[in-house]
Image (cartoon, rainbow, N blue to C red; front, side, top):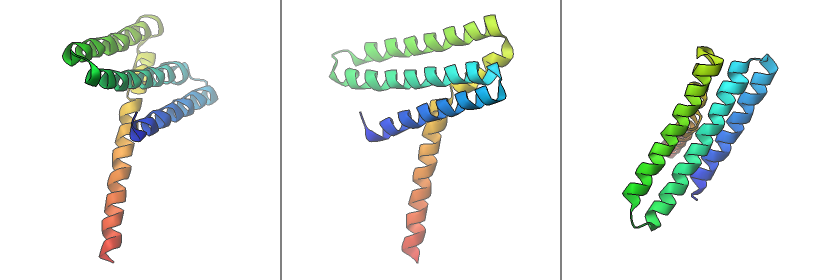
Length: 127
């Protein structure tokens, strides 16, 4: 697995732990149940994407494999959010939906930090 992907997974797990600690400190089930579990599911599904990409490269039918994986991931998301709405209510559902954005947030931070480093190099080379 690529080093950048490993770093994103590591940062995602750290973010998940921060969300859990914050939820416990404020004693809010929306945060420590909805968002934390959403963060974990997001991380797990991103790991699934990475594994599918590696196996699709070696497979004879990558299209079928990736479509099946796509459907599995969205089924996981749908079941999780459905359970939250059904048993815990809409606020926990929103917390879970925000938690599912964990990987996207970490990827965004990685891209922004890379762009800042490029800008910093350009500015230092101008001096």
